[in-house]
Amino acid sequence: MPVNDKRERVEDQTIRLASGRTVGFADYGSADATAVLWCHGGPGSRLEPAYLRRAAGQAGLRIIGVDRPGYGLSAPHPGRTIAGWVPEALAVADHLGIGQFAAVGVSTGGAYALALAALAPERVLGVIACCSMTDARWPPGRATMSRPHVHAVWEAPDRAAALAAATDAHGEDGSKLHRDIPGVLAPSDLALFGDPGWMREGTAGFPAMFAHGLQGYTDDRLADGPGWVTFDVTSIQCPVTVLHGGSDRMVDVIHAHHSAEIVPGAKLLVFDDLGHFSIVTEVVPAICDLLQR
Image 1 (cartoon, helix red, strand yellow):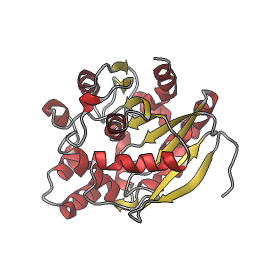
Image 2: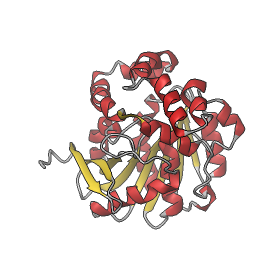
Image 3: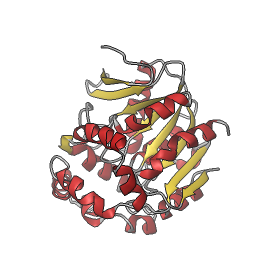
Image 4: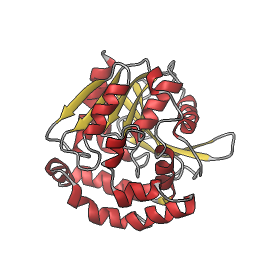
């Protein structure tokens, strides 16, 4: 497979696990840079960090986006848990010869980045939990989440009903999400959506989010609905930055305040004018700051 310039992504890479399942990933950067495992949002995919690859490269960072099961090139895995995904991420790192790495978790992915730190402390240099949902066992945070997009999936009696609820809210190919999302964006998010470079990368990555319909998203919600019960967030030892936009209308900033309270030693960093998408532009500086702590 051809490799582009060191700041460009190497597309459509996969590994096969011992179980026979396939895991997809994209590698943005050079092998001699500091590795960052990117835990994407829900919905999301390995392609999510593409827009940041040049800024990351200039900062000496190599970002590896990993498709969770049911997204992009990764086969679905019904019944998966947050902690159960950790060996898949480590398998990608092992395949690439990466020993230690930082982890970034965006939105839904925040829990997965924190689980990596809790369960593989010898591997994780630090975590950025960006615009992330907190532990769903906390009632005030749980109450802020969208009823059709989140609660309907959490409350479904079985996976088939949960999948139907997720599909009804998003559309089989995400078309409803694409149509409805501008109505819940902060002004800074709308400005980012007006950036042709960001939109080009976002549009290119959109099909991967729904490559398996809503299976990935449904299984994300079924995994986070019970809360952070499959890993112990209080065992985290590495530096953690909880990064959030104060104008986030999709995951309220109260999630960040709660996460910063329950993650040992976490640094809370809130940008009042930024929203759920625009806050991601602060991830590269936050990683650089984290690695100096």
